Length: 355
Image (cartoon, rainbow, N blue to C red):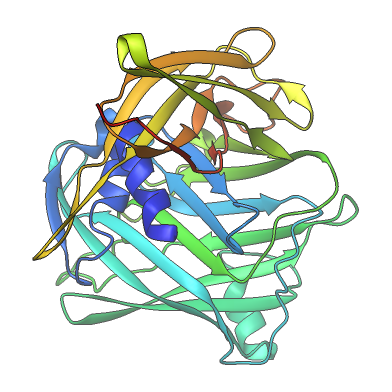
């Protein structure tokens, strides 16, 4: 199920997200040549109600690698931060730029995130990146060309508003002879938390990320250029799909509606996953295609016709939708983007009569 969600997203997401998901089955040291700085910065939070998985993606894009990222989790998302030391928390995937800003090689680092002991020594070590008192410390053990790297995530309370604050501290690499130790130049990062459900109460849950960019020297932070990213998770987020086969034109008439917290989403692109299979003596052959897009009207409704010559499963998909921020920001450089999470309909089967 998770693999299908990633496959659908490949067809409709940005270039930066393509880099993120195209190597899902690759090894830890996967390297790809690309220019990730062509993409804008974004915070993307996907929490499908039927999958028990929370995916938090940070794309840094043209803003360059971060020196520090502070993620504010809204009340209603229960992450269960305080777990026994060594407990499995989730997984992390990072693409790091091996060169300066601009076109460069991207190296993939991946690993598990586990809870770490919270004691006087660890609290003291946290203060340079995450001042204050913490509820928990999570850590990801990564490796870059054989060099072990620990990426800490410090978890604290977002009182009095409720929710949590996650300080993601960019790890330090080995310094070159006579030079300062550089920070890992992260192009994008995905944190996957398993066995977590989205909130059940209706509402629009706003996630925020405050990103302090890294200077071109790769070790100095630039607090005066810190910017904000936002992600909106509507609950419920519903995308319906109805299909009718029209024999004269040999096409499928697809209709439905997109709503967020009961309100229509207008002007949003909808795509369609057309699922077709052929059973052969040597196995199943896949002929899946992506159709669309079409846009929703002011009532959140859409209509689309797709040529269909044989029976198929059909699913409507709304990708992560990035737009301008709504309202002021306290970040020195302001709010860069706001992204509403992706959604999908249930899959229906449309039978095409044989002639």
